[in-house]
Amino acid sequence: MKEFTVLDLLNMDLKEHNTLNLKCIAGRKGLTREITDPELNRPGLTLSGFFDEFAFHRIQLFGKGEAAYISRLENQNKMESIEKMFTYHLSCCLFSNAHTPGPRFLELAEKSGCSVLQTDLSSAKISMRLLRALSNVFAPHKLIHGVLVEVFGIGILITGSSGVGKSESALELIERGHRLIADDSVELRNISGNILMGSGKDQVLGHHMEIRGLGIINVSYLFGVGSIRDRKQVQLVVELEDWDSEKVYDRLGSGDSTREILGVKIPLVIVPVKAGRNIPIIIETAAMNERLKKLGYYAAREFDQNVLKWLESKTARNLYFNSSDIF
Amino acid sequence: MVTKTVIIKNRAGLHARPAALIVKKANEFDSDIYLELEDMKVNGKSIMGIITLGANYKAEITISADGEDENQAVDAIANLFENRFEEE
Image (tube, rainbow over all chains, first blue to last red; front, top):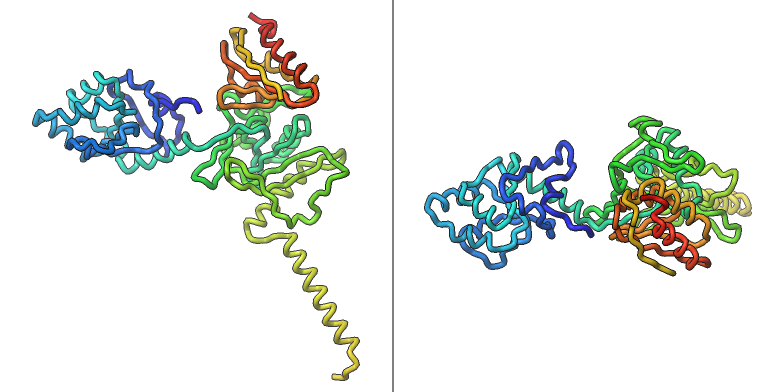
């Protein structure tokens, strides 16, 4: 994985309720330091001079209490513990509630090459948002060849070998009012262990498609902003493959096959491609069927149960009519 | 499976035109072809995939191919990099 530095943290493009509102107030040299741990540390004990088990590689979050303690230390001229703290290779210091530490603290930070960040959010808010943002960054991720679309609210990853018609199927789905998340290279992240989030690799390249014969097209310009999305949870994998007359395809749809990606099991549908088969409609139907399953309705299972019931009643009837007893 | 590492020699990096050249060449072979940069691995037969790498000047790319004509495929694509895609 590429290094994630303090500068990357400042540059993170987060919106609305996720924004971190960070700015660097000292120690610009330290912006190139790497953040290796997605967790935070409240350095209260450290400031009081207890350095055992000091998680120095984490982001050090100074809340109201820690900030007040620092100003008292500065006033009483007891800077030893702060000096000692800066001898460690801290990833960065972060002050919440828009608090600015005293000049001596900043001087020490500057000298040791550790950046000091500030945010106007409260400690509780910033720690929640930071943990969320960092867990995204540090989540296991993988680049996959395929197209990610949202069909009737279901995130569908269309995979299959090159030239099987993934992009063309996606294009027709977009034309029918569904949304494109990423074409060709989809970046998948495992979030909190059981959610697979897919997005385009880069905003610059996002929402462009390559269609053989047309070249590269810009989907958001052609079909409008309603036809695109930045990210979406992958809830179904549709694998397109060339029709193989030897192979036995699922005819009932009662088998629950899944594909494991980054440790998350996703329902899988294998769709054979042949001239005359309208793939986008099959994908649309798969999406609606998946929604029904989420609501607890399994068409194949229900159908089977009805057939069983019907057969049962038939045998019962036959038993009744064929019996010689007169009721 | 054959792999080969090349360094991008044209100043502009892997933009649309070189990517198209690679894809055109890759499609002449039956083997599965992949390009790798750092932790990213993309299909060598897809333009958007190659552009997604965001490979710039002097980046190190690993070409790999798997199939009947893997040797020729890797050599042909490495050759494109060597020739700087006929660019500066």
